[in-house]
Image 1 (cartoon, rainbow, N blue to C red):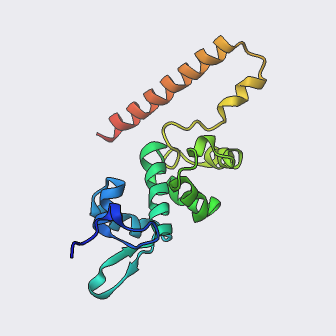
Image 2: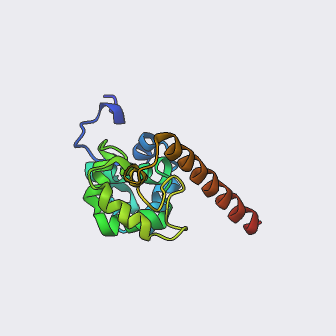
Length: 166
C-alpha cells in the first residue's frame, strides 16, 4: 500500500510540518520560529511533539508568508495586523484574497499602517494612501513624479539606515 503524498491528500486533511514547509516553500525551522512570534499559529501537537497543521492553520501561515515576503511587512507589523484585523483576515489573505494594499479593508489598514513605526511598516507601503494625491488637483504626470520621488526617498532612507547599522 503506497503512502499518499501531500498533493493527493484531501484539502481537509491535516498536514505535517514537512508537508507545510514544502507547500509554503519555507524551511521547517521558519515555521517553528513563527510559532514563537505569532500566538495564533498553534498546530496540533501529538506524541513526541509532532506537529499537525489543520487547513485553517495552513491558510493562516500562507497569509503570514504573504505579508512577510510579498507585502514586505516585518514580524512586528504582521503581529499588529493580527491584533487589529484578527487571524481571520490573515487567513483570507492565505486563501487567495488580494494583497493587503488592495483589500476591502485597506482603508482601515491604511490608517493602521500610518500609525506604524518604521520598524513595523513594510518597505513598499507608504504612511498615506497613494490615492490621496488623486484629490489634490495635481496632474497625473506630477503625481507620478511625486510617487517616484517618494519611492526614491524611501529607498535612500533604507540604505542610510542599513549603512548606519554596519
